[in-house]
Length: 385
Ligand SMILES: *Cc1c(COP(=O)(O)O)cnc(C)c1O
Image (cartoon, rainbow, N blue to C red; front, side, top):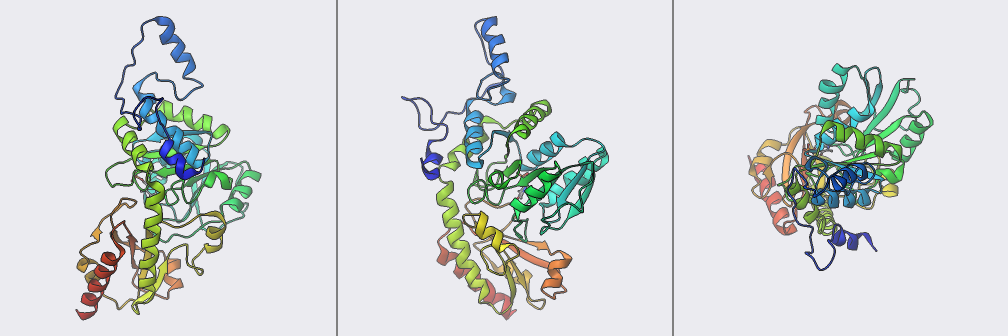
């Protein structure tokens, strides 16, 4: 079955039955006999689909776990109430005091906070490494346990050579954990490129409608067992209503992704024609950092792109004059969003720019002409003022 069709079949209950698995809300699962109770406790140790207690997910979450596991190509998937919870718990699962962790500099800002406020005070030492590192040997020490990567990186979207990173890490027995929120199991599959764990903030494209917080971590081989045990010990779970909404949104993941990409590429072309623009950041562009890896490893882009303006351009008036675009964090919902972010020193140097603010856009599912008209009118206002 093609993966587009699979999206429509994930979690389908036995027939006759509803097309979507119903929301099952439960803490206690009732049994008629001690035999059944004890038997369930035994079976749940090796089977994630056994209904035993609410914290371990009910049939709603079980259906979503198996769907995301299939999307990512893993051996086991765990669900979390946010993407950050998935990142923090996964790192906690594989690192203890005295261990050393490598993290690429382009990771999501909250991942850096997890490292600073959670791992370092608990005795894990951390080194930040460049996004274009492929041979990790100069950073790896005997106590190095894992490397955390994100590709494409947050805001500036640099694409890593994941197969090379994974090979170099594995030679040294170092685990590779990837944040795959950009690709969301659809455009990009880090587990297939050699990574051991792939994390998705399902708050973005998986749930897709700007109304759910959730995270998923999917792992291969032994890492799947370690991760599962740590998640159970930490008491992490996803509420059935949010599992339902995410599974429901998966039905249209392929169509949404296609339209986000199509719209974003038109917006990208529009920005490229503006004389106030120094550069557009998007993996699809031939001069984009890591473009070759992206062409080799991914099946497309999404609704994200970032734009670097000339120092003299009035970026603030441009942003405030947009009416269709709301200003906001997060992305992956149906709507167009815009926000500012601070450029790293090396990117500033690349553009020979002094002013360190750039913009990140998420292009939604609106009619593209409305999006382009809004950009046009805001640009005229910014240039007039
Ligand atoms: C949003 C995001 C997260 C965090 O997800 P939350 O659900 O907001 O906690 C992690 N990584 C990346 C790349 C993200 O964009």
